[in-house]
Length: 147
Image 1: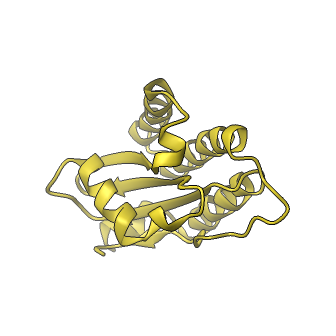
Image 2 (image 1 turned 45 degrees about the vertical axis):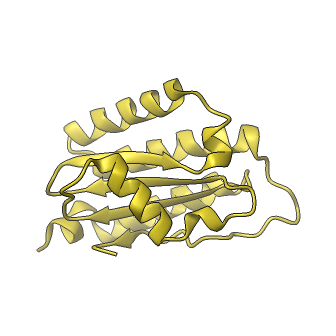
């Protein structure tokens, strides 16, 4: 089984997608997760590339957040678009990464993603609350593999 496919079970993947759905219920922000085998560049640089490949900068309020994971490289990064990045401090990104890292180190891949999604959702909600005319601009599904 490939590194990407074995990173989350099918059931865990559904739980991550549900975490995204729940987080986005309270915000106009968008959250995506991308999992691939490895990266040969800094994970944040790859996250920015994937962010653009997934066209996440096309949200109306520029408030997308990507959680990027390279399974074989054992690296991850969190990347926020300009709208959310301008609102939150580096301490938010760092504390979210710390929580996720602890879970990854303990082998709790699903929990790492769920907690990262939840923290991102809380920040998005505070700065970009849900409006009744909001639409889900990006897929909640986990994207996988090289793009």
